[in-house]
Image (cartoon, rainbow, N blue to C red; front, side, top):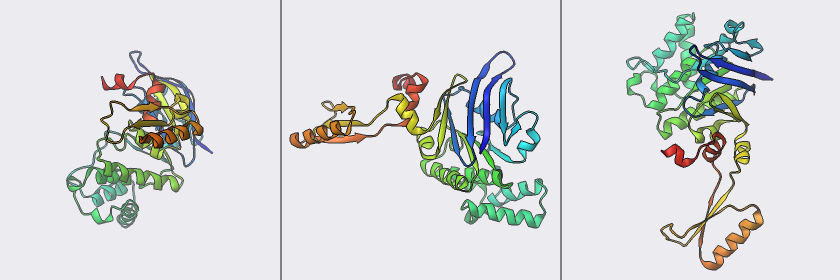
Length: 293
């Protein structure tokens, strides 16, 4: 079952800036779907259109079979959004953040307390429930925000750069939370600039470049399209790297020949698997040197 269907979607802002151009794709139930692209490529605009926060100017987009303009009210009852700019109130505890939002949504005090405990335990935050957010790490704060987004048990969760600015441990805490949600059948659509995040989480991904969809498929599909394969780095043990060879074998037989030669000549062989980052740079038409400039 497709939760999201996008056909020929376009968005032009007042003043003529064309943020999205003829974008089409589908997202299945329970899928973790990543949107990748450079800054300003149109990722957040696309997410906001699907979350019924922006009106498209061309094409069609549906969520749970409801058109995003006419069916916005019905869609909003089944989704949750965690925007990139979301920040917790530093002088409120983790417990109070979630409980107050439960009360705002109309729950009784008893139901709000029960639901708050349930969702905090789900994200391993119960031991931190009485701590002020000012005293929590970045990863824990982000999990508090996720708890707030999930109190209504959404079927579709939109995450815009959910781990930006977090340390490696905090990022992995958020990744684990996203995986648990997907295992329970929640569909997750997220934007990210972190290629390792997309590799770890995405069932499929879309690459947006200047408002257009330039790639749609799995991580392995992206690497195959870009022609990014295994590298073998051959060098003398303890060498300074000046005399190393970087080889791109085209078959297992060629890999075997390189390894046999290295054994004969006493050389060191390092296997370097293909990366999504290289595939991304190839697909959007840049280069590593361009990105570093």
